[in-house]
Image 1 (cartoon, rainbow, N blue to C red):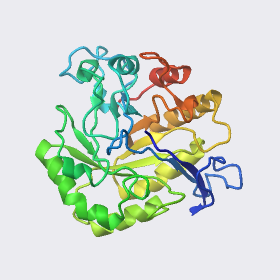
Image 2 (cartoon, rainbow, N blue to C red):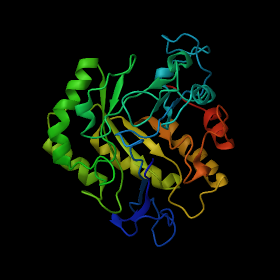
Image 3 (tube, rainbow, N blue to C red):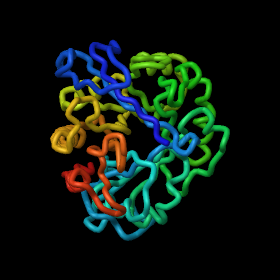
Length: 323
């Protein structure tokens, strides 16, 4: 079962929990361009293990045919494309539907989804994740062809990885050992604002303390989540994250912190967000949440098996820079 919560924070202070009262421009909040709105949701482990839903990436071009080649039929190097998806229940048909526009996905776990089959034939990269501290004890095999390793999911949340910055720093040598053994680049713990049951509310405070406790740790990329619904709010958040001087992976985002979460609202926000994310050089990768999510189906990219929703069609067909 997937566990999710949504909340809204304004000016860095939690003013609500367990609800979705709105974005930074409404419901008592201030404009995201001048304040520090925050928002997020939680994805919990699937099936009682430290996993969750899976994520494919985007390319903006058609899928290639050579499983060992990252270049598609149009000559675009898909490994440089940013667009992905956070989802954990892919079938091969689902991934094939997304493959023309995404280049990677993750599922909050180390192994890919069992029903996805030969995803490499679709030229869609899978990125494994060490969801929490317990993942380090399981020693599951890293999938062949992996290039990156995602670390702990929302560790400032009690319902997620639930690790203080100091606890995460103490575990980091084990994360590095896994990455070094397989030649992987390391993506930081994925942080978001927390609105209840938190060891840290503010993701910037968590990151500051983590890097202070782990000054020699190898962290090649920075992972963040965001669920506010305006381009200004997203721009503010990514802009503030630049201070850590690492390529940014926005590994969960969609419009959840608004009263109106209709498909029309999702489409408008997606268009604005993708235009910004594709053009912003500090953003290395991003992943929409999610493929199918019963709590808010208006964010779904997938309908029936192997079929894209209207939103999914927009996500797959949107222009991609693929630098």
